[in-house]
Picture 1: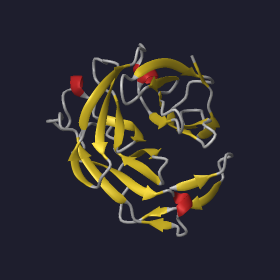
Picture 2: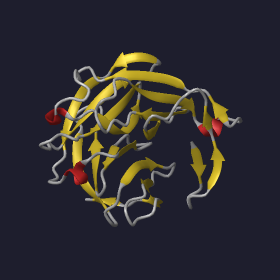
Picture 3: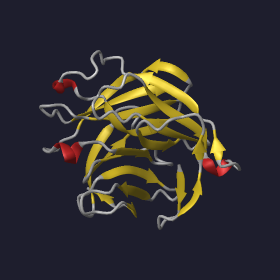
Length: 225
């Protein structure tokens, strides 16, 4: 993993020992000194075991290598690998750490498209466990690319959770209770947005993957209603 400046220059490389990058998708910060890397990309919905890597925050490490604690998990409601096209909701690219749990938001690939992201929770502890389906959120957009959840982050003070797609955003208030969802939009052009994060000043940063004629970028975001 790499530490970057605001302008995208690499200032540090941290090697994670003993693990293979099958499909790393998102990172989360629990604001208690740990960072989580989600190896849960599952485009074909055919992976039988997924994992989250837990490491101390890189700022606390003097060495440039670290051995992660591994949290493995499965979807308890998936019985076929891959399932029928109507059940293709076991891919995920979004993760947040919240209190004693980790929450996963699925990237819905169902056909016909149902517009739901499922919310799964797993305990923040090493070993193999079954994820718990805690909710499903209906994302009211007509096209899947506008409601495919590709990243998530938790506000360091309010605890609000933001989800992003290639163009849209959703702010989730009162995440652990009623989960009030406020649809928003991301200013700027449509692009393949892959991750979102808050900095210590609660600014939003969004990463864009290389997409057709667009370059990979890291930008300070502007999310509005």
